[in-house]
Length: 332
Picture 1 (tube, rainbow, N blue to C red):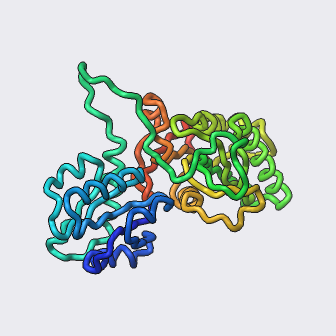
Picture 2: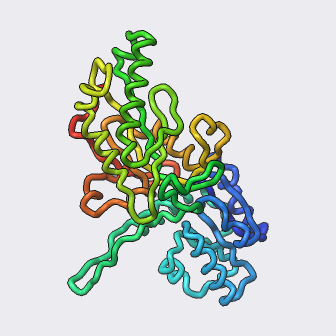
Picture 3: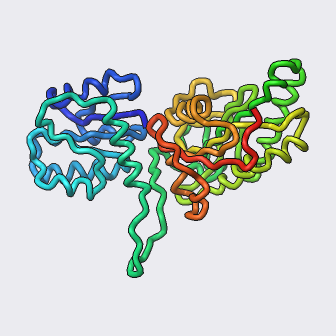
């Protein structure tokens, strides 16, 4: 999550966020009231309660909570009587401004980390406790694309997004001719198309060795994890059977639930999407071959026993990421 929104008309409050505003790590925006941000993308929102009485504060916080994203409070006048109650309601930060110091950029990462820890921490279970079914935490701003029959070009939806990229061995990339490399690329794309087909997946953005696949998903379940695990675990078999691969294939894999405007393949050049940018950054900058990565938007959809297969890998561009290792390791 890279967007930070400050809801404030107070110049003194705005000034303490100046470091965040100047930081290239975050997209910072100031808005004057909550009503104008309902259609915005996922963001960390700070609500300034300057000049508000207790009843007004309660109403504003209720509206903020309804947006379903990480939220926090700035309270320059100390108007909130029970700060602890804010965190019980789901707040992930509280700023009193008593010392008047500017916020440090690192605070935002700490706040988002704290938020994710609270969201994904398991409740204390006793013999008297009845555990309710876990609901996914991800609450996007666009409807879920439950099937392609509901998807229209030019509209915005929430999809399951698969990043997949073939990594040719050093021998192949350094010595083989263009024709053979193109055969490998075509064979790999065909393999991915076949594997995602039963899950209604569509190869969407693709450049030479890999790209993105869009898959329909729901807000409480998504079985695409099975397909992704099969790609990871059957690498040896695919390398032998799927095409002209002179060595075992190695590839990068990641799953993310994200929001994007949809246009047909080949017409995606004008699409602007934070989630699309994020998954490409994750694929190119962070994930390693020999693993399957998932993000904090996908993790809540896993069954509890399946979660044991994924290890926490920390934060990347505002998202917590997890990975599952292949028993075959990597080849490069």
